Image 1 (cartoon, rainbow over the protein chains, first blue to last red):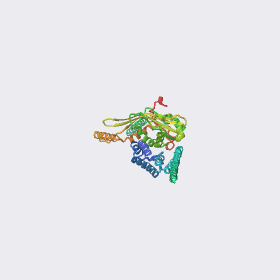
Image 2: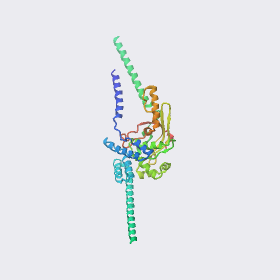
Image 3: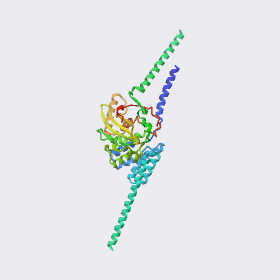
Length: 147
Length: 245
């Protein structure tokens, strides 16, 4: 009789361990509605859908911090890329650096991205300087011609 | 006479106990081996994963050989999230795919011709995931709907050029969800719900499930708590030995 009780106890405690063991494991990441909103962007890349997806990315970062989880791989850099596309280099570089910080595996790629952005900004500055010079040239031409 | 009765009772008890034990052992055995005819372990099937220990994975745009035009989008928008749970650093698919597009190697098989060392130089990736979607079929039956996905996936090392992990199989996802109960009426209600769901076209969760199952034999990476301790973990071997390269 005793043995019976022991087996029953053993089996029930084992099954309890299995269920609790799985249930209490903290999730690795918080992804929210990431895949859903990304699919919408792929289907119809209109401004609304892109803005919604950007919001989802910001929420993932916020929620991960609140739940003291590591921000999922690629989220900082994907958001950084969106900022880069909007010519917000400062925010893009900040996010690319954050990706590097929590995932050192991304260093080579992120450094490449930051380099590209800096190069782009430089050529843009040059173009601006060029056009300013041209305007001056034209103005000086005009003044000389009127003289 | 009385003691005989007690003895008899004890004998009966122990017999009962033995039968119970016998059945629990059998059922445990059945549970472990019964439903899985060919089991393999991660360690024996993919030893290179444990030798090279790649920490980062670059996902390449999939090659879609299925008849479903959407299959590629479903794969592309769900793989980043699902693969991350295996504990690797996953390069941001949206960003890398855009770079491939700019370089003109998207939507074609050209990406297969890029030397693997290039991915190491530009991205710093340890491994590259190649995927071919062979089948993406929806089948509707009277009372159920299934999504059948056949995938051929390979994880290749950028250091040794070797195949570290591969999957070649079919996943069937039940789209009708849980049985709502209620006998035949419940089943019919379920079928109606299934039909409505199919019309609304939200396969993202099902694509996630398909990806999740296809990846089940992939050893865990650095950010997973079971990193380097899952060699003896078993999985159903869907890959016949002759197809491993």
